[in-house]
Image (cartoon, rainbow, N blue to C red; front, side, top):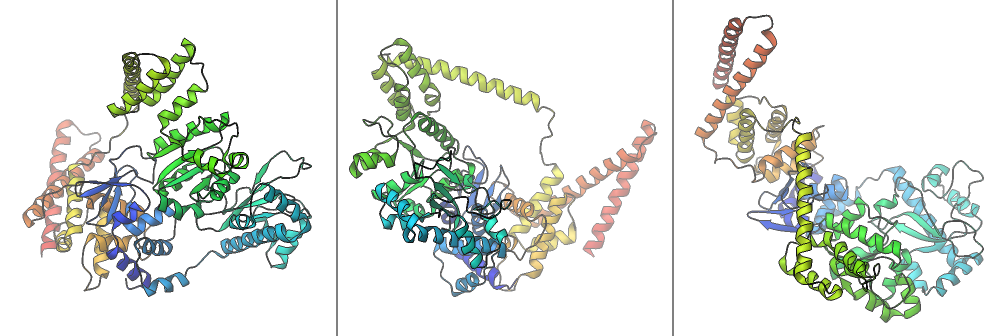
Length: 619
């Protein structure tokens, strides 16, 4: 275990505060000696399953079984290689070391992916040059200028033009020695149609970049009135590098700014994001579709700041605002919504800027509402509050939201708003809410009872006395290196396969550590999460060790007497378990008396075998 990458990683882990590293991505809260958070590796709804031990430098989710250390967390959440995760962790904690430059220089990139990235970069450059340097490009450039975009903005957002003669780009890429396969893999040609031609020809192009600012695809807009194609925008089809459900437009550029100002705007289109940038709001990202995907939610959680929703003011945009706010609620991400009660008819940020100017757009974007306030506006626009039916629809429309509130002051605030709008008394609305909650509780109870009935025969994961004793021995092994010798001497193996494998891994680690290396859970995990440790059950082993090491598994302090009691429990349970198995498999066609005598003989025989094994180990 003397590899330079592993040594560097170990030194980084010794300097890293795992709470600081995880807080870079998600919000954490202190809970006793540990910290807790919503697990970013599954759709976690409430605090209570994801724990971080600052002292031991590990994390563990007891719901999805994810576990590891700071580097392992970064590797998982950013989907990086171990080498890349080491570099990223060092960057997060500000760790300085000349070895980082060395490691960075040795990074190996898949040649096929590298060729694809290089080809996409050349395509983007070709589009940008075509916009500024070709005759056809001037027409597209004039269109962009008329939309209020300066040359600096155009270059900032990598906007270009796909030449009308689509063969030109293909010939250019071939002259740069890119194969037709690589060109096809970028998604800009149909490989089944010859001669090969850029499918984006005649359109304005918007480069789409990943979270590292690499171009991965394009969204291309028609701008000529003579263009009879159906789609206003066409996106690159899914490739090895591009999936629009994984990407938020302008995420890389917004990342640093969002962390600095503490918020990010989520908008509907590219031009809306650019409009924000033009009025000085640089923390803005755009959806690549109407829905907010699981990956998009993960990216927003990664920013660890307030989300400000600002989609189109038309009916589809407002319905999408409602849908996305529900998704953010489910992911426990804090957010506010841009006021949907406005005195102009323009539907998006780009149009507001064009018609009303910079000051009006900034004023619009800074007018933020809670979800309840936004919902009241939403329903006000849909009902006639001059009628009894309209008033009832407004109150009933707010009930699902009001039922989620826990604070009495929040409930009072929104009921008072409804009272002022409808004329209903506070008491009447409050009673309606109570009735609604009772119905909701009854539904939850029925659903729960139904779940109990449907799952009454499902096996429950409950550890036996044997497994609990074995687990406790592993806890001692992780805390005290001397226990490993006692384990070899008095037990030798565990009956539970995963615990047996964990014990073997711990023993293997001990046989390789340097004399000057401290024996503790941090160093054990540094080895297990590194590329030095290769095992087909690696994730399962790490999960088990973090499960046992985290403070939630409480055991009495280690003493030789306590250990001997565990050994006795394990041997007894092992004998009884093996006796039952032998009895079950070998007692066919015997009378009840014969079965009892046979079981007794099996028990005595197995006990003597275990005692003999124990004597051999002691000697």
